[in-house]
Length: 192
Image (cartoon, rainbow, N blue to C red; front, side, top):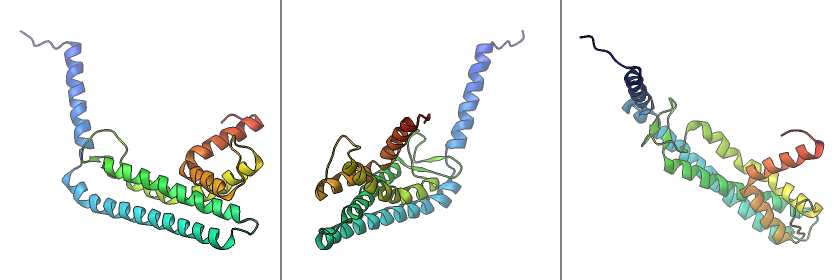
């Protein structure tokens, strides 16, 4: 008697084979773990050290400017810039640490230590993390300008309030930039 396989059985067999292929593809081989894991850890540490330096330097500069130049015109924007850098540095540190705690992703797409789909640290993210303080440098003064112009719901002219809102602008720089893009698109009637 001929062995007849139903379409459903064949479909299940194919799904099992595909799952095995995916598992082999996504499971890091010992070679890639041995080769790439130390490099990823070094990059992670370099990113963390760089962001910590940016954070501490911006805070020290902020304190220095507040102490020595608080009476001069225009200092509010310099302080807003520094507060934005500090906020973005904190945001980037939180993000890089969360990803590193989630595990590593290697150049071939395999994941370590498990195969669960979640945010992980990988080489492609390094430049993005290192440029986050620059986003804060841009958003801090924008927030200060927006506060003084009355564009935001909150208005503030006192230096501590502007520094606070600029630091928050840096902390949420990506979200702020997206909102400002939407605001501008609505102003000119363009689709975002």
